[in-house]
Length: 305
Image 1: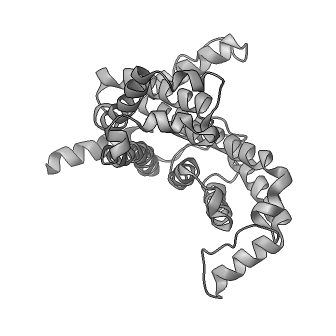
Image 2: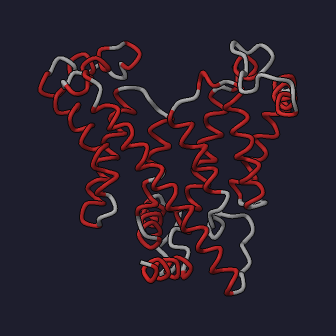
């Protein structure tokens, strides 16, 4: 057992196996944060300022943390400006791990200022930002290139970065599995009726097809139990190469369906963004350059990473 652990640690020190997608994930998540901010731009005072419709109850007594919350609410305009600036720094790779840490703290504070609008996607995004503090995500898509470390320091950074990437992957698996277990013990899901009730609600009527689909009982049962199977089996089978691509493809269809038909947007985007970590550096690199060449952003993939 000790020999196996030592061999595994030595393997993780050899290379940053997810460097390309970690960089893409950093950029994509920063873009997602900017998008979330700008779609609420006209309501920022109502959401986070002194006119907010909820009280920030993350702290119940007057101390240093309480003072930060009060200051952020009283000067939410400057707070949002600083938050946007830090997102831009992290997106460009300026400040690297320092800007990543500050961004994580900003997101924690912003979410605490109004917990009523936070969903599972926001929580997962916050966790990913925490792991990205330790990840080596600055080899690609940066304003300034990262200097090469000496051999020993590079080994340590590779180890930490690979553990950070693995932590994000495990976090996704835990999110799926816990959701699957919760659904399994819910009588509505167990009887195969949950999809029917969800798609019958006006809040989740994303298209004109919803009313037609919801009356197809065979579809309700298939969608209901397929969701259960996917959420319970994904965390167990995605680590096997022969199951990985079919599961990732099924996950894309699963989240795309929810995005289009149920109008749950940010949640689905954040979950799908983690999928690339289950692919190798070379696979992600080639996919990116194929897409880039298709849209004429790049002529051909690089021969090596």
